[in-house]
Length: 561
Image 1 (cartoon, rainbow, N blue to C red):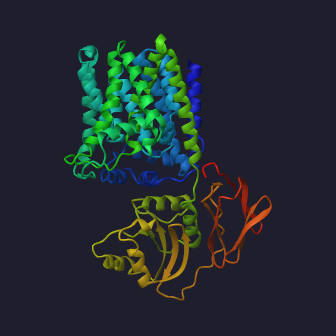
Image 2: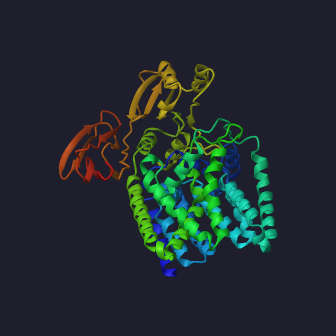
Image 3: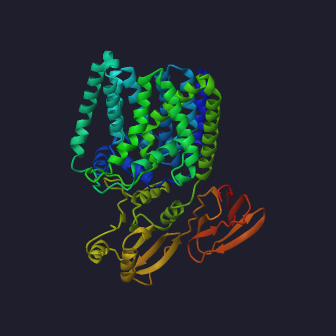
């Protein structure tokens, strides 16, 4: 069994670490890095204005200073935390069931779960809160006071939903109070310590945390459906297409726990409470009289309760395999879950590849500007993404206390008097560079760009999908800087619909080559970020962009075309 556990953990490590740095940070991940780059005090103040407690950002603050900033390094922390979670789920299931088979099944299913794999590769607090939730459940069941107090406080300081785990454990304890006679006093002490540990954070954030008193946009029934679909298949869109397999898997889950109820009611009721109450608790946060911020249901809202679900799967399937009449259905159900999990995990991993959303654009900004140039950006809400990618391409301008480059300024998206705001911001700048990051998401659309176009001359512009780089001046005869820097393509794998970009000096000619044949040639009249479209008729294989004596290779694949 020890060899099996080691092999499964190695498999879990491979599935979660494979190509983990090969796709760009999403919006929320960039927010994590932005907070993590701040000082501990500044970062704590900033998180107090949001809805997330600071523990993950404190940990990330230290982690970034140890390993540096890259997609791989940032997400490696989450992978490490998720592996610890898998180990704790094994111990938790073994303790609840007293059966090695149940623990083995639980750890195998969570290892292959596409839902858990996805959130194990995300640079957010969800792997951390899931780890402490698992430790909290385990410590509470074992009566380990110190670990319970520490993990309870840590879970609540990692994510607000950590409090849900505390509430479910309290309800379970109340229902089985007599059965816990020997540890009730220690359990109360642990919870008192947890509460005392949380008081400073509650006092610090009260009155500042972001709220949303609007009504819920989802029904409790859909919350149950989404939760079941996520843990069964890893799917959060088009959930109605998966109703039949999800119903079958849910039936197996409930049947297995029903069989286990006769042997261990206390353990079974814990799993049932953890799975049944979570959707109701999430739904309650959207009620009109609950002043807490929650928009619509998201995948991340459910990952915290993975320890309950996968321990339940392990216990239930083991109970079916012990029953003579249900051994064959149980084996078929297990095989189906393993196959479905494996296929969906491979599909999800295949879909996650590096798209050149921002990095070439930021590299172009770095190549074109000097430390004395003033840079502005307008965005539909991507401020941390801008700063993250400026860091990634080596932008080393001086910073303020919020870890923002001093000569890079985000133009506010809204003002009661927009012309007055813009005039005040640009009053002292006769020329500047402008970065546009999804400014089309703003409302009213284009208002800030229109003001700039009305008051300055656009000397130079590089369009990049919905984004762009522009050089503005009050002098329409302003000359562009003579830039000789070459910016290599950042994409290593491209698919139909992608664009591969390369930055080249004026006069440079670039060839797109495949199998010795030149497919397209483009020439730069000035320093340009040239874009080459990857068309559906391009076959799989190795391609290259050639500039004089330099050649930059990448792969084209149709695996998700």
